[in-house]
Image (cartoon, rainbow, N blue to C red):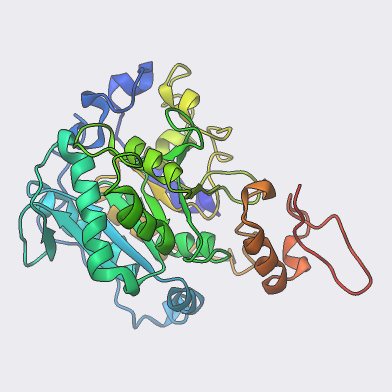
Length: 377
């Protein structure tokens, strides 16, 4: 199913990574390799006007999103996108026209007001040296103004593409009251790991509360100045306040959040063998169709034109005779030791053992009265 969505995308994709990615670099937060300074994306503006997608009254699309709409009510996600005045027209408005429509609440964080885009103008500087400052200010704003509007709070860049329905599906066994966050997990600098900023990361409501109330004001918990890499610094804060770095993989151990465009994860040769990615990624990763979950959540470095392509491939293209209405695989990862015990208990009462057959999380304990679909290892 995943290939069906992206094969045509790959054929038509002509984006190449900066040579520092393909030859290997020592630090992904170097100026040249940072998302907001990526040489091949600086001028990757989208069309001057947003692209209109199909109307919702086409009979062959009727009813397709009923299950997704039901989950949208139960798993509420606020999405906030970090952008800047130069990218309001180039990038951010195309996010608003594509994947952002599926969030329960959407917020664009910038340093200048844009009424058409609906930005929140914070009194912060722009550029890489201010990303940590801007991230803290953004989460404080979201906490003060939208804390009760969602259960989960997603941060993304203005070149991140998110499949929001899959994010909700991944989060569905969890509760916003649990101190946990998810993303593309890296293993350097922070003992429990941290989440890649470009791939996007999502905080539970409790994680957001702890971050704003307990971490940001406390110099022993969180860095107080504006320096440092945004994703590393928030990872340190999360560890210091007892917020668990969650396992975002699917039941087959495949990733869901990705720091590059689909092509670079699916097609061998784009991510060099000496690239920092292989040393930094927390869980074993592969290149090829085994790289990515059928319920992938996000990709980074996606320019606006490609966002519209992904919209078409994901939500409108239908190969004739191919039916994807079978049950989705379990949303939980294979390593059940990484899952909060309460989540496992709730999952066992909500999902049938039938849906778990043949997976790594299939129950190993059965009784005459009860089948327990997930047991701790």
